[in-house]
Length: 290
Image (cartoon, rainbow, N blue to C red):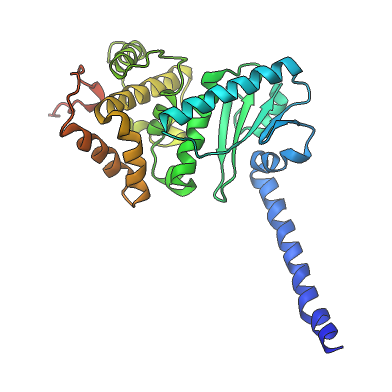
């Protein structure tokens, strides 16, 4: 009897508070971050599970599904090769019209986007009409970096130009060269085109935040991408094949981004015999002002 009275007096009311608290949290999530909430409950939507962690709109055909799974597999191989192993396991959501895409992605434009949460959930949302290996690889790179460094460090410390620049290294839509020297030279050509011969440049500090990176028109955003690709391709040439792993390890050990970025380059520069590259205009000292 005493046990029963204790249950009725303390544990049952406490359980009710927990249930109410969970409902309040879920309601708040749905209201403040509807896309993340929709992604979290994708299993209970009308989307079909093509395989574990891959969900596609019911209007995606069987032939499209087979092509999609092939693209995903090839993209995973790119990530595995670049990062020397793939650790992330994002939920991939494939939409077949703009209404579905807006429901799961924060943007109304583009072929794909990626979302991460402080509690560890990660999602890649794709537009079936524009999907290809490059799009998937680009978004997978964002998620892989987030998984390795964690949501807080990626959000608070990684500048957007680096996040996008690294993703471009797995994405051949703008530059197709794979060799580090050729890749840098092709990004230089693109950068010169979008800056009108270096007359209208963006400094890296101008595109450190997501807001600043995407704040302008299409010309501005393309210049932001080419600026990122130019700097990161230059850095990767200087750091060699271990540059990315050194940076990640440094940040995991507590270094800030700037220190880890600089140290990865210096460590490789001491003993390596690297091909000489043309001057990186983003690293040129600013002219003295009168």
